[in-house]
Length: 194
Image (cartoon, rainbow, N blue to C red):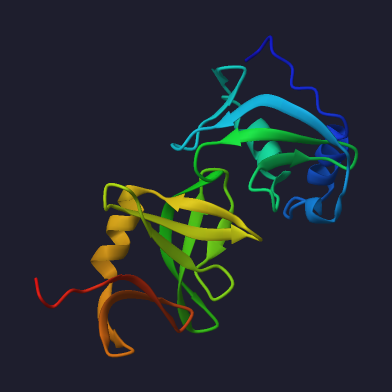
């Protein structure tokens, strides 16, 4: 990766934004630059980022790019600067939820998730969990990170969720749920016939 240079126009604007504001995401949803093609950047299902087939190993660079990623209505992921929009390949979703902790926010118990790019999000109505059953009939759990960008919840974190889940009747059906921010989130329906 040392001899490969990712040349995105406007990246210095993003870098300056990140230096000025220690937290926060640039307003990529408000930018409407021209589409400038595709670059050979790829986010694998395991959360690793590659460029031209080589893994990007600098966390600061991955963090910088993760702040300017956008999923558009056409179903493609883009890196967006004020002057340029380039398409990248994403196997599943751009982030992985790698850890979870219980916190208290104003006396309310909440679950907080940390992603592989150090974004932290609290499970809430605005940031819900979604369980998708894949072709092998296995669950793929996701949490919404921002706008329409999700993180795949890692297997170990998902097992932690299952261990802390409780049974709850919702609309006359029994579900395994977790609670955060005084809201129940369904993990899966419990089949009584088993």
